[in-house]
Length: 134
View 1 (tube, rainbow, N blue to C red):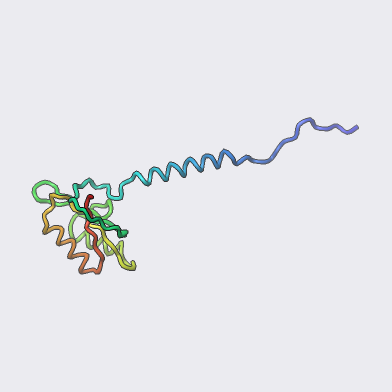
View 2 (cartoon, rainbow, N blue to C red; view 1 turned 60 degrees about the horizontal axis):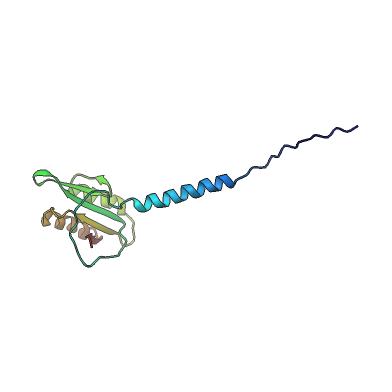
């Protein structure tokens, strides 16, 4: 007499909960990346009616500190000085086709500092965009 087993073990795996989890993670990443500011250095940019829509490869930010001192940032990295800006830009933009730099300078930064960074971009053949607020 053959004895039959009453229950069979199902070896399949249901991936429906995994796809739900992946969609939730995807939505979280999309929302998180749109909320992150491309320039996390807090600056008061000058206002302008004309906004340039070119896509910059990297950003340079100048922030005024106390007593006429300035902080220079390439992306979010504090590079310390104008020479540090030049070194960091050369490292980041080496081999790029039409390298574009977005210059973010606080309202309180003296014009001389902005022009010095503009000269760095011109001397190295980078296209420069001055960032402003609408």
